[in-house]
Image 1 (cartoon, rainbow, N blue to C red):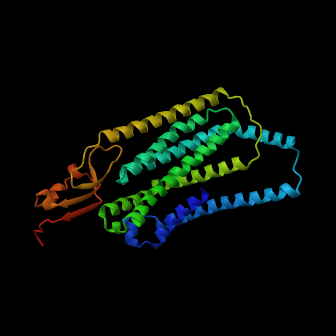
Image 2 (cartoon, rainbow, N blue to C red):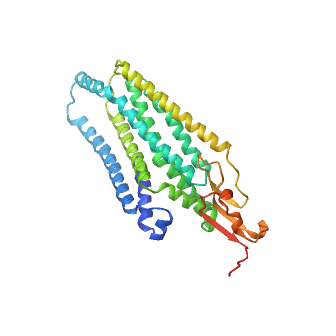
Image 3 (cartoon, one colour):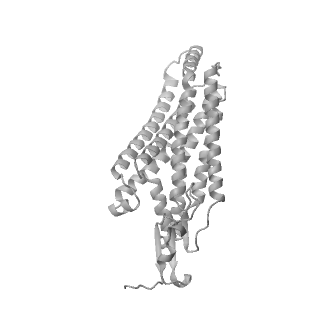
Length: 339
């Protein structure tokens, strides 16, 4: 996963470095230098994590042969004591971590619906956020420490990776595969160009708040992967049974109901958005579907005056008909009054 994230971030650095200024402005890449510096820093973090795993494996391989390890009983007792001390505040850490992650992921899901014209990608992204909101607080209720730690690290790694890198990368690859292998002339397709341009706008950093959310998601993914690797490489010890205080029990219950309530709200918003959507006119080829806006928000319109039996194309561009999210407008076979 570290390596895949490095490839994903390197892809955006490569795009920004070789893009021209008009292309950067067109795709709303407003902070190119900041994006390059930030993504380079994350790449260094992930490469260091990969190097640490390789070095540790090599050292363990050598020390297992040449050095005498401490007694198993003494080592197990020390690890058990350390685990007990860490377990005292582990739940609080995971609650804060998961709430910040879900908040940033929810913002990104909202941006999906408000930006791109492909409902399947937006719905799948929000569905992953909903599943994560349901699952993350339930894992904290597991009292077997070894099982809970394994489940938390595994779930956080999978969901954080999927929402910060995996899903966006898959969305980009789908369009690239469609272009390279299926239809090489698709570059001249205005519909495909609109889809790709809006997807690029979504995945790049657009403003300060979006920058904070994307950085928080990438940082959360890095922390989750490091925790998972540590859990897998740390020697297994016996299960630690801790007594849950009434305060912590209440905290876990509140966290459970807050996350479940938020997941239910997201589900209701999603179902409502899909069920109450107003249809767009026939000349609207692609539209975006904001979560809290039921009106037609056309992103790509193709107005053919002959096909529509009209002489003035402007009569089809009223905001109440096509909304305010117009990105690409194609007008054909219309008379030019002024030449």
